[in-house]
Image 1 (cartoon, rainbow over the protein chains, first blue to last red):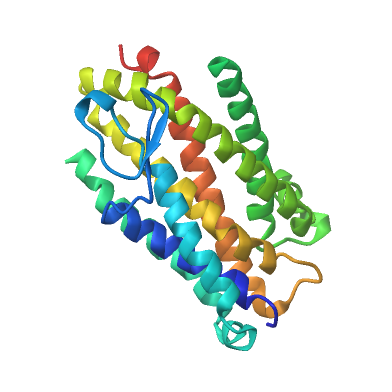
Image 2 (image 1 turned 90 degrees about the horizontal axis):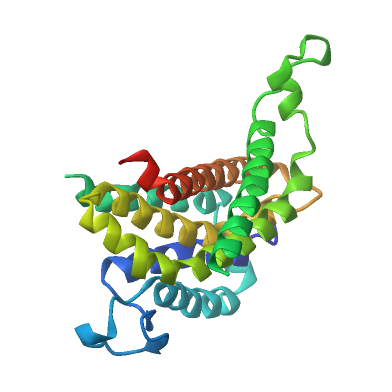
Length: 104
Length: 154
């Protein structure tokens, strides 16, 4: 199937990078809703609880978008369409296994 | 304002749930027209026509969720911790990760549902649709349970 490669590469890399980013706590930035500020560095307890989710999404986007744009179309189209379907399924299973810590 | 966003977020989620469920069922085996049950008729839709609606609704609903998140982090999550409802925070953590994975897979989902449909992409489009359906159902149910949790677990 021609023309799917770059889209599949983006989706696969985005999911992988997001999962690694949250696993290793690698947020590009954090949002502190108590004072409504974004920070690259961790703030003290007085800043209130942070939200890392926006930063993980941004991390995944800034890695996956350039890769999808740079990868040559011929190479990307060699990727089996099956990987685009399998990778998110594997990532979801990984997330469920990791987050079972909340239920123990 | 936050209540308005929450209601709109919930309504968009209902529309998204309907669209993805129709599309997911339409990827399963169809029966001949003469023997069609209600379920057969439910899945006898033009699956590809749902794609753009699902993508737009998923993105807009996720933006709504992102706008509601600060209020959740400041008010709801500490309340859940005070009530000892650790599992409730766990299912929300899964919800945010699934939403992110779902946002990421939208480009691949779009390209495999692009018309004219390529036979080589049929398996991928089916997988991606069912994965999105799982994500959307999980997030919908978790969102509603958390929204009503004080009434549910008194």
